[in-house]
Structures are given as structure tokens and as C-alpha cells.
Image (cartoon, rainbow, N blue to C red; front, side, top):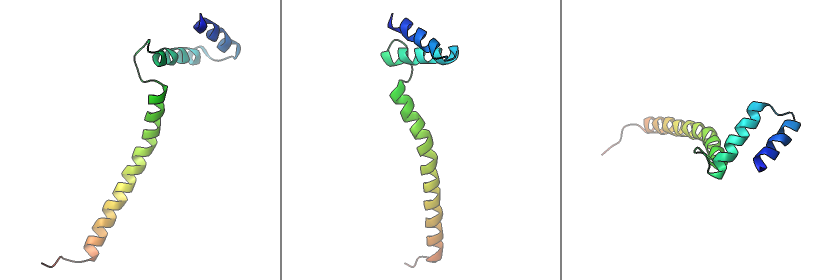
Length: 78
């Protein structure tokens, strides 16, 4: 019943059928009716997709810096 009211309201807002369908599916996932990642998990996935490449770039910079400084210090003496 609540879903039907929401569907009619979204139609009044001129949202596309596809958009409304995706929202309904996501609402069902969040409610536990369907399986899949819920909204908070999707937000975390989006955040990590931005964060991971940044960390990989930072790691590459640190690797190159350590190689540079190891080369600058010359051979190690024992």
C-alpha cells in the first residue's frame, strides 16, 4: 500500500519509469525483501572507488621516493 502511494507520487514528479523502478528495488533491498547491497553499502563502495586509486598513487610515490633515496645514499657498507 505504501509502495503504491509512493509510486503515484513519483509519477506526479515526472520521474521516469526506470528511475522509479530502481528506487523500488533499492527500497526492497534496504528492507531486506530482496538481496543485494543496501544504500549504506553502496555509499561505502562509491567512497572506496575514489579512495583506492588515491592510495595506490600515494604508495607508488613512496616506492619511487624510497628507491631514489636508497640510490642516493650509495652502496651500504658493512
